[in-house]
Length: 196
Image (cartoon, rainbow, N blue to C red; front, side, top):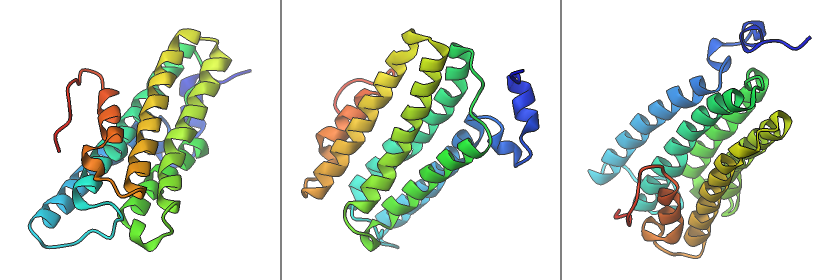
């Protein structure tokens, strides 16, 4: 007999933070935005240089859009999709794995000078791709086809991140590039050009 959401959450014996999708992503997304803002202010005051392949403006833009907002989107989708599809939420080790990929992505982007040029983008992009696959599986299993529009929006957001990385790899100033603009255009309630 299938478990209810509450039974599945109670059966998880690990840390409570991994008993529901919004918990790790909302909490650590908020923590990351504070840490990233502190790093950004230290960079602007000349106290540190970031060990990232991105220039400082591009790192700032990437981490606040694709790092922080990516976590918030994940928390929202992992909470909303089970409600829309009638399926059980993703909890436990699958949630731990997805969260770990997000964390490793943040660290690899920050320290990307230490890695081969394609490694940091590959790790960073693994998170939204894994999230999209989990969401697609739930939508298909729940047969709630109307919610595919949310997956399409996540796909465009992910492609914007791909474009952001591509522009960085070819040497463009990506803080004013197309990847950032398309990423911002995916944000609900946001319109107009981006000025960074």
